[in-house]
Each structure stands twice: as structure tokens, then as C-alpha cells.
Length: 156
View 1 (tube, rainbow, N blue to C red):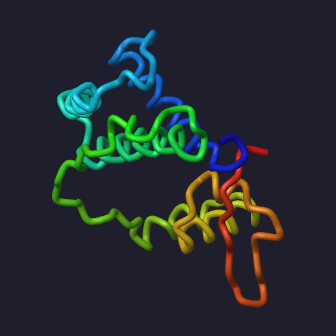
View 2: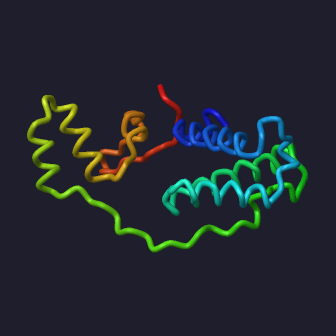
């Protein structure tokens, strides 16, 4: 998957596979991981005090990894995804936190160079993630339509 997905996504996938491996035992064959063990893994994440949204993201990540292993890769047989039927945990989402304009202006006014001011303005107005912002190239910016296109790619 390297080069096809964002570098941070790949790091998260590897981290989740390592955590699952520790939970079920590192010598386990993937096709032998049962839905009960997958549910146990999810429950253990919740019991560690992880936010429900984080646990749901972790579950989606592992479900997606197993789906790729089944189809199109063919590493596992159809029906071998232990996360396939586990439903996400329910939670009341918190409203998103927005940096108040006054705080942004305070940081912006102290930016030492024009490059920093441009990066800060783009980050504040676009909602781009750190890696997306730092990996931008000129071809990602359309000055005529005043649009920025974030393309997933690994670190340069």
C-alpha cells in the first residue's frame, strides 16, 4: 500500500496490526482470528479508556485491512474478516473545536517569515492536515479557481 495511501494512514495501519498481534498472539495465522477475538480486542481498547471515536476508527482500519487481504489481494478466503460484523460503538459526538480568530491572529502576527504566514493562512482556512499541507506541490494549487487539492502521498 506504500505510495497509494497517505503515509500517516500506513503508519496507523501498521500500528493497529501490531496491537492486534499483541492481543491475539504474534504467532497467529490471520485466517484463524475469530470474530470473538476481534470483539475482545475492541473491548480491550474501550477498557483502556480510549475514546469511542478512536476505537471506532481503529475498528474501521482493521476491517479495511482484512477486506483488502480478502479482495483484491486474495491472501485470505472470502468470509475470513473477523471485524466484518462488529458494529461501531455509539457515542454522542463532541462539537469540533475551532481555533478562535483572535488566537489565529496572535500566532499569525508573530510568524517570522512570509512562508510561515502562507502556511498558517492555508492551514487555518483549508482544514488541511499537517502532512497534506507539508506535501503540497505547485501542481496541487490552482490560482485561477483559488483551489487547493490535497493528494495523498508519502513523505518526500
